[in-house]
Image (cartoon, rainbow, N blue to C red; front, side, top):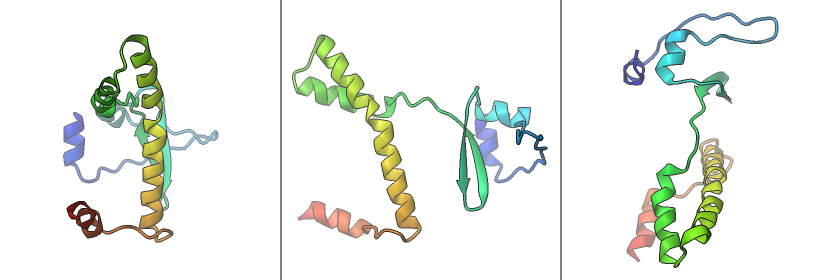
Length: 124
């Protein structure tokens, strides 16, 4: 089963056992379909445990933008590489902060901003 096949299935249920050491075994079909390796992320969310594969965060989604900015600043060679690595390490914590803030807004703990306010600010 491919990842796309799993995404098309809205819900697939399987009962699994929990060992005396609180360990569970991910069914092979799910393990392969989702691309698990030797680690998984475990999230407690809305009275449910979500277990999902760890995707190595290489920052590739932002690499091009980071590099373009650093080159525009005139960096080259080893200085460029050093600064790129430094900037790349900041991506995951920044994304975690954004997700945390979004969760707080969704829970009503923080007031969010409306889309109209965001786009209105650009127009001014």
